Image 1: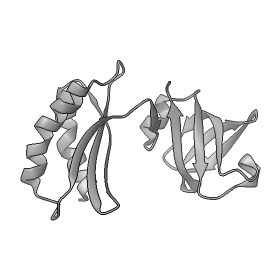
Image 2: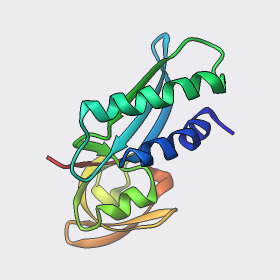
Image 3: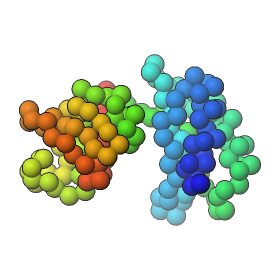
Image 4: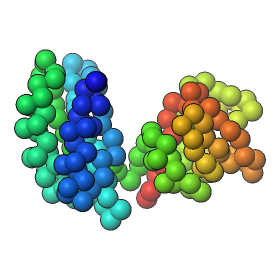
Length: 153
């Protein structure tokens, strides 16, 4: 099991017990530093005290799991007002909303030469998304999508 999967499995019951939703877990290197980040959400919003509570309960469990053999920074964040929609369930939550889509390369039949464009999210599946682009609904394979974000501001 990967570090992200292990942390997700450990974090989910803690986050849920606090009345929150586990939005995402990421582990990555930025410059010379490694970061393990847990993102949480709740319909009425997340407070710093929520992040602190999750961190306080999860930090000793991560230490006990001892799955990372070098130093790293552990951080708990709100999913934020501008957030990436990575999972199918994230996408389904925002059907009918305008999203920003970034592709790995431009696809002329979708957005001309643009690799980044806005569209209305019509439906979401594990392997594709249906987007309304300039009044037409297009099925887009998720393999060509680098990122889909929504701005909740």
